[in-house]
Amino acid sequence: MIKEHRIELFACRASKDFALKVIDELNSSREEGEGSYRLGDLVVTPFSDGEFQPAFTESVRGATVFVIQSTFPPTDNLMELLLTIDAAKRASADKVIAVIPYFGWARQDRKDRPRVSIGAKLVANLLKAAGADRVMTCDLHADQIQGFFDFPVDHIYASKVFIPFIKSMNIENLAIAAPDMGGAKRANSYARELGCPVVICHKTRERANVVSSITAIGEVEGKNIIIVDDMIDTAGTLSKAADVLMAKGAASVMACASHGILSGKAYENINNSALKEVYITDTIPLTTDPSVDTGKIKVISMTGVFARIIRKIYNYEPISSEFIH
Image (cartoon, rainbow, N blue to C red):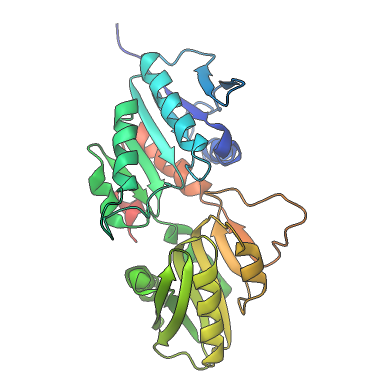
């Protein structure tokens, strides 16, 4: 008897909307003879003490199972992903692929001071222990985090959507800026593709999430600058960098960031800054709180890229062309 090769897609609660858009993208780009895609039924039962238990209501035996979930706070999102992977393996899934649009804990990628954890490595170990066979994620905080995994990692870059979008804007006197020295490689990749100069912002920190000063290195006068980064958390660095660039004579400052964490006073910081517009992807859902002003923030979807790579992985097609930074 020939073993059936089939795909099953499921979403944990924090990324349900993202997953539904991935399904739409898969169905809208179906080739002739290709079956339709759907989101499988995953039920999460809560308990009064705060625990919960994911369960599949349909068979996944022998299937290639994709579980979609970003692991932004709270930690319940990570735990739900781990439990769902474990449930799939115990239900005899052939392969379980964790699709993690935003990989949380990635900033803890090294011991930057004594007696601290390396959270990114711990999460990689947890995913392996749960039974994941592969991980697909977008813009890790540091590329070398891929080495923390003992199985394949598909590291997708948001530049796949941001660069075509920036080109479509036809911005004159464009310059790309890195908000700190760590982002110089990313900024240089964007600038090379867009054929424009690079500006580097050098920052010093008082402590985590608190920036004491920023200086800009490069030609700023009269430039329309786009700051590129992998994430926006409190937006303190981003807002200060935009203000410094405008003070140095920039014509305008916008930003593109892969992950809009937007914690603390992020929305207030963005709205009170010199930033004209901020573009983020949908790896983390934007708040739906009507009291929060999100007017400057625009969302560009990554679901088309994820859908394309999911299809290629399932069909054993080459995907190297998708990972050009």
